[in-house]
Image (cartoon, rainbow, N blue to C red; front, side, top):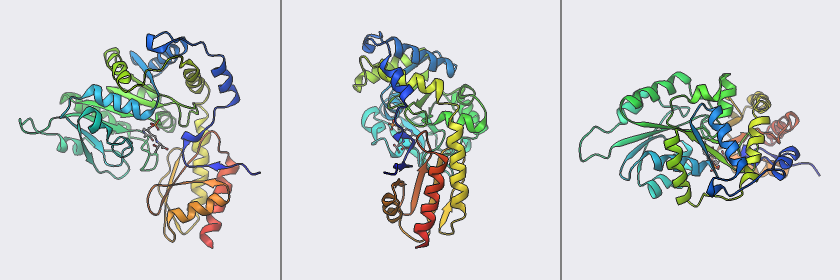
Length: 341
Ligand code: TLP
């Protein structure tokens, strides 16, 4: 039987045999008591990688983002987000439901806001206006093609926001892809953000888990909010071990995913019915001019290739640990054949 080529997301990776061994051998304890040595090691390692005082292991990226929003805001505050951001679109309106805040979405071309746009959206200090309290940025930007936030733009936002007394949170679900693409460290590209969330369970290949990093004070508050959400876990060192393994062994190999995404993009570019968006990391997005996205997806499924529709004619393909060079070439060829029919 041919293997399934799953390009729907980099969340679909399965733990490698070596990662599973690390999980099986993990030392564990009750993490709600702060006594899981493997979780503690992962948190210390993450804090050190990002040059922060502390870090917190959380079950998912969504929970990490929502904890950060809750810690940075008070009910009734306003939060500036990019229109196509994950926080605004794919987290169940949780910032309103849980933190009681109002998102203020701002459109952009590739997912990256400039300070001038943000500045215009900040509420003046008038007593009957909700007050802007937080800005959330996303790097890489998922739904607008996996692009990397221009470093100077992000720095300008952080600096100006702080001068205005606003906090800035980074949804860095794929921050290691951004670091690789720019040739800089995660510490360098996230400097100054009040909090950063990153995922262990995407391109890094762990089965679950994300991290929040920030100041000791922020992480202490975040731990309380994690408990409110039922995210306090017990002998979770078995999962933290996968995360540690991922950080130690799967960061450099993201280069392969970027190469495969480029290869896929080059092949797709040759197909006249495909309108490809720029590809910078491991995400490939294109628009179809002749058939609906669902039709192509159904046809691909019959050839054991899985893809994701993110609009009526828009498709996203993501490269990762379980996708080879041969797989992407096979997928590109299949797309070409289906569209020709
Ligand atoms: N993204 C998933 C889906 O939810 C769309 C994917 O397949 O890309 N921030 C960003 C930028 C994300 O892309 C995601 C997940 C999250 C946060 C949430 O992480 P999880 O799924 O762990 O809650």
